[in-house]
Image 1 (cartoon, rainbow, N blue to C red):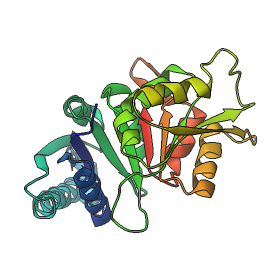
Image 2: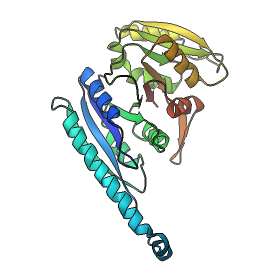
Image 3: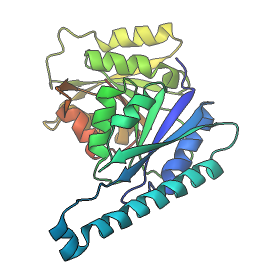
Amino acid sequence: MPVRDIILQLNSYPEPTPDWALETSVSLARAYGAKLSAGICQVHVPPVSNWLANKLINADGMIAQENRKSSENAKALLSQFSLTVGDDIIGESLLIECPGMITHWQLSAKACIYDLIIVPVYGHKETTAMVEGLVFESGRPILLLPERDGRQLRFHSPVIGWDGSRAAARALADALSLCREATKVTVASVTKEKDLSKAAPIAEVVRHLARHDIAADTIEIPFDGSDAGLVLQSYCERSGSDLLIMGAYGLSRFREFVLGGATRSVLENPKLPIFLSH
């Protein structure tokens, strides 16, 4: 399925998402002929309704000031989005109320009808929780977007991380259209990290890609004792690859999100854009 409908997750609080995230997302949407929408999380902190806190530190006054700041940042993001995204690719501007803190709940319900969710990674303390929730709840692939040199973005040399798991298969299927547009595709398997004897070999992944008119190389990378996410990122850096495609491993039990070590390592410190599917 081609990527034609993208939503960009933006934060209004405590500081607005930086300009580079919007500019890079516009470049990506234009490169793939997609519409770009914005999902702006506007935080609204409820008053404490505590007489002593108000008496000592004017807590409700401080909260009201922070809510004004969040509202002003959200309005600025909406304006910037309208001015930056051309009429040919602009989609919807969604202002999403996030009570108390940046959360994924409201965005997940809306993002499930888009092809791809872009989440900028720039040090916001709620990014990890946001991505965990979107991965499990939206049912859509996530693109982790760290700041990079230059604002133009198109993926020419993606690497597909393969271990034969359900999550890896889901990521492979979701990323087919991006791979079809690439110049070079590599299927990478980390050896000796887990038992791959029952997994479909990477040669079969190459066969499948060929059925979609995608030529791919393969590589087996020895496990170095860290985790597969770090190993794959290191390979991407050495080889000059511009996108890592991998399954988001984890469990969702009673709405508590637990990501596996390999997924968490790329989420906490992505060295390049990461395409995640669960």
